[in-house]
Amino acid sequence: MIRDSREAQDAPQEGGFQSPVAYFKVVYQAFQRAEQFFGKSSEREFRIAQQKIRLQFSGPTLVSRLTPALDHLPGWSGGGADLTICIWDSATTGVGMPPPPWAGGAYRARGREFKCAEGTVHYNDDRFRMFFYMDEHAMLLDKQNGIGIFWVPDAGLLPYHESGAPLRMLFHWWLSNSERQFVHAAAVGMPDGGVLMAGKSGSGKSTSTLACLDSPLRLAADDYCLLETVPNPHIYSLYNTAKIEPSTLGMFPSLRSKMSNANRLETEKALFFLQQYFPDRVILDFPLQALLILRVTGRADTMLEPATAAEGLKALAPSTILQLSDQGQSALTILTRFARQVPCYTLLLGTDLEQIPRTILDLLSGDC
Amino acid sequence: MVLEEYFRINSPKIVYEIIDGEAVIINMDLGHYYSADQVGAVIWERIGRIASLGDLVEAVARCYSGSREQIEGTVSQFLAELQRENLIITTTPPEKLATESESIGESQGTSGKPAFIQPILNKYTDMEYLLLLDPIHEVDESGWPNAIPDGK
Image (cartoon, each protein chain N blue to C red):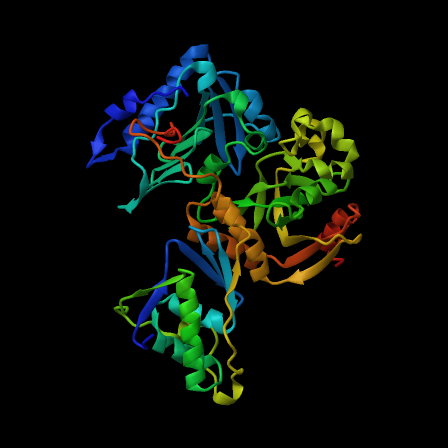
């Protein structure tokens, strides 16, 4: 592991507590040194929910690992970025991540939270968010200046799920507010309306999403998306990916040749970048008309049953909040607002995949 | 448990919302989540404004018909269960008493009240894996992320 701790240790202290301003500056300087290694950085620009975002890579290595999932997002021109994310890896640049300067434990005081547990380090205050996951990756955000940092020790070791849903903690921190929330859910629809599909991992989100590929429904997300609740419920696509268990590949024979990781299926789910093969089947955003709770039945037919708003909330909120939210109560409030805004149904998933989009289309057209 | 002992939600580790008369509760530290409806939701909603056992018995008796003894005994058991799950903790009395008009359910005449039933706390643990990602690695004094070698 390449380490770069000298500057962090020299940074000023605040009453025995390392200043997050000083530490963030040290990390940003490390990125600037990494940029110099290649001489010229690479940039990608795109827009999510009216936010202009720029990815600034220290070199080309991570571009191909992080951007395919974002290739469907529209670019922007004019003015500066709202958020610039600085990205580097140590293996190709020789520049390490300055380690977090705070000792282990968990503290909450004066609007700050610090927690070191389960191989992770978190730091939150009104301005900064920081998250370190063992020696796998680190993400930091300075909300005041709109600067994010993403670091990995070795671009070649980036986990496939990070390529499938890159930078999600940074997007969550930047895009979630009192009116919208990064959510763990799938979404399919058309420009005039669609559905959010909730359920824990293995509940059928990806299978249901891919089952809509050959239907009029278009795909916004198979796992993560941005939910807006004010003034009306609306969904924004973040990633054009779909990933399924290799055992499920037999249900989608036409996709077999389109996997991005065909040689690693012993340890990874099959990962697809839909924009590369089905650009007209991907959709950027649409108004939401219903919340569907997914349930695999093993029967042939797909059916829809009315559900309560509380059932919808229980399907959507725990996995979203426990995975993504450092603001649990405000996130739960947003999700509750959404569960009250739209009707909830349980989608009893059958094995005849063609019935899934047909059932959703019937619901959207009011035929159910 | 005495009637004058006060309880509050164990926030911020516990977050909750009440939707359609059902309390949905999440333990952010353990990854467990819970739901309670009917009598359980009435009790939970009232604890959200800090309440004593006496306050809770009053709140339930306004919404449900049953003997005072039965209600007090059952509410007391339910509070003990909420405490075992670390969802609520004891606290000092509130400075200003909450207004009862905000409670779930309307105060009704004896004839219109549904019969008191035992409150049920449904517990779900299928998401706790999200918080059990990796074992804790002790770090040495030179800092993170170098783990101390095994056996040191």
